[in-house]
Amino acid sequence: MPASLVSCLSILSTIFFCATLHLPIAARVLPISNSSVENLNLSALPELPDKHFRYVAVYRPPALSEVPAIMACVAALQELAMLDFDTTVSSDKRWTHPNYPGVFLSVYGQPSTPLTVRWAIFLIHAGIRDMMLRERYETGIFFGWYRDVRLGRVLFWSSRQPQPPNPQRPENAPMLSTGTNHTELTFQRGRPGIGSKLVSADQLQANVEYLEKTMDRRDSMLMIIYLMMSLGGRDNEPLVAFQCIFPAITVEVRTIWNALPAAPQGINSGDMINMLAELAVVILRERKYTEMNVVISDEGVEIARGAIRTRPIPKPNSSPLTSDVSRS
Figure 1 (cartoon, rainbow, N blue to C red):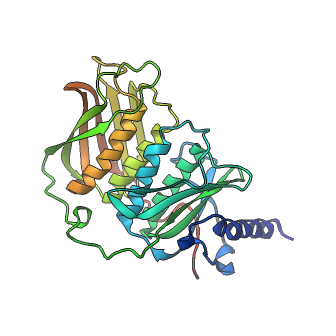
Figure 2 (tube, helix red, strand yellow):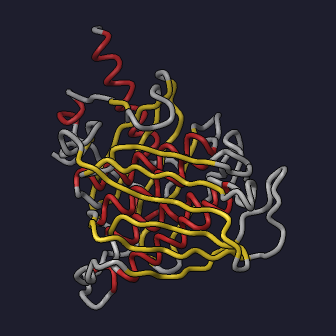
């Protein structure tokens, strides 16, 4: 039997097996057509931290609501990114965002090998990025491989049909004027890491300056998810400088964060993760999808600053980076 056929049959059997194993009742049966597997292609995400990580997407009805799906990722990453990458994730764990309920996110390892935080985070990012690229928000399972070893899967699902977009909800209304303005947000401090000097308050504050250059909402939200992923596995270590450059959906995002000299270790990775989670809520509520400057303070003392900028990429990511197994 040709090796390529053996490989496809192996992947297909894995999909059928995983799609019926310990999944919520609402999304347990995901029939797959044989014809759609013939040209199955696993492709790497070049901007993920490890180039050997690959995934395949499976989409089936029912449809999901876009913003709750995105915010379920934020809720999951706010918890997972605080943990050591080698920590295993319980198979009965699920996340939904309290402000945007309706979509759940669950992760599962292989029957004999639990999924670790590292691969759960990679798969969550890969899944929501795939949805954004395709602009296809449906019940989805995303299977992960590393050097041809099966890792596990992430499931986006809902126990109810999505409601039609409500123009009265902030995230669905037209974007506000993009003139330069500010907003304040407060967020919980991450638990102090080794060497952290940040001990004076349980909460920190951030002043966000919205700039005139606008961003696609998908770019804004993927920026937050990507940064949370990049900060994961650091055990709340103090941050002195943190830079990240990556292609989002329509633009390249360039962001840099620096602790200020007055407090060189006054902020840690856990603080940044919590700030980004709260920033996601704020920009959706205020409909401000723009470049921005951020100043983080501890009881009125500035401890860190960040800048988020964009620039065009040679060719927008108009097509997904992996094939999906979908209804025929």
